[in-house]
Amino acid sequence: MDLTYPRTLPRYPLGDGRFGSGPAKIRPAQLGQLAADPHRVLGTSHRQEPAKRLVGRIQEQLRELFDAPDGYEVVLGNGGSTAFWDLAAFSLIDQRAQCLDFGVFGNRFARAAAAPWLMTPDVRTAPHGELVLAEHAERIDTYAWPHNETSTGVLSPVRRVGATDGAITLIDATSAAGGAEFDARNADVYYFAPQKNLGSEAGVWLALLSPAAIERTGRIAASGRYIPDFLNLHLAIEQSRKRQTLNTPALATLMLLDSQLGWILERGGLPWAAGRTRSLSAAIYEWADRSEYAAPFVTNPALRSPTNVTLEIDPRADVKTLTALLRSAGILDTDGYSGVGRNQLRIGTYVSVDPADVSQLLRNLDLLIPYTIESGGRLARQS
Image 1 (cartoon, rainbow, N blue to C red):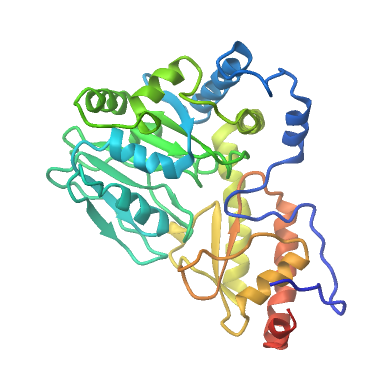
Image 2: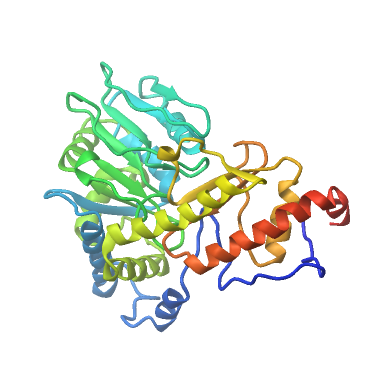
């Protein structure tokens, strides 16, 4: 739906209106560094020293950002987080996983963990907007859940599950990494793609691996299980130790990531970034709590995501019309996730978002939600 901004309404312009939950805003300074290409990486082999130095910097910066314990390694490969789900099924789950399904992405991992060579996973579920926690169970060798459920805006704790008897903990951190604090000692695999807080493009996955996870991948690789090379984490570990990937990566993606990591670390690292996302999201949650037209979808404040704010909008305001009006005002990608809730907006509050733009976003919402209600179906018919 395309709409023209109403001439009768005042305008509250933004410096940058990108509020997508992923892919997300890339700062102009990053693009300038990419264009300058000071290390002459673009258009060169990823197996030569300039590209390998780039990979090495990313690995070191991520270890610093996450305060990685001794023995933990940063591994990377092509394909993004979706590819990593299948990679986990081939290379990390020994026999049976317990998976937490409290949103779309936890559900999708659970489906990957039901691969035919594995036992049926133990799937614990919660309604959208709520949280279920992992519980110790017999014959479970892998516990897996999202740190932040991007589809709903629920944040979960990163923790060990009781007496795990050699089980490992896998955390999908795609919309949390670089914007939410955690203790790396409580995860064996903290994996993510860099197109959200980490200010890059999609198409690559990265993972912080514990010694236990590294040992597990090596044992499975030697077990005789068929594993395609592209989904073989043991091979990815070997290549990452050489500061490269199994096949050719998008070097521009890695350059944008390198720039964003340096920007975050210069400002105080993960504590600074997590404080910024908490402040950005808190401004929206507090606005919604006061608003007569909106409410936080996640009703328990303790579970609310600092990086993805999901709002339930007054049903009198057609949300497709509302998002089209927002787009006409330069406010982009605020659509709710399909199949979650009824009449929603979803607002990314990643670390690159400017606090001044959040303030202007809220002024626009105060104006455009009641306008959408008052206009009824006329705007939709005009589109």
